[in-house]
Image (tube, rainbow, N blue to C red; front, side):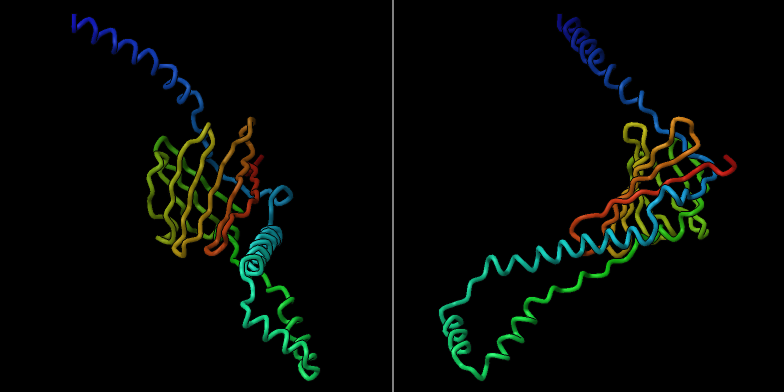
Length: 220
């Protein structure tokens, strides 16, 4: 009786697991192997990414500047000091100068561009079931395992992890300074175009900026 119950339980378990396995296998990872060149007309360039970084930095700086003003109120002693200064005519110009200085917005912090932005105009890609190897036009090679495990790459300057997500290649790259870059690779249905949606978060920036790089197959 116990053996029949165990057999029934196992058959039920595997019957329920089979559709999940087939569903996961249905979205197999696209093969990006080949030689590819940057499609400049459909890609964000250095100037565009710099503008994105400036805008995000300025937004975060403005939020930080407003926070103390909303949470900090002057003490009674400070209010008395301000009243005395405003009452004295000899300090009027000084008060105006202080106010002008306080009201001037801080310049947004200048954040670096993604390191790969200068070296990704030509990509030579080799891919198998376990790894993908991307040779950049600088001569550097970025290698990633496709099982989600991390490994050193880019001459030891980064940790790279790759995995399949609904047929797209997702690459998570962490650089030595703490900056991160996430890439989502998508192959067109005709297999002649690659679109890489990228999120760049330099160290110190609170939110990443999003940009796109597009590629066409060499010879097409």
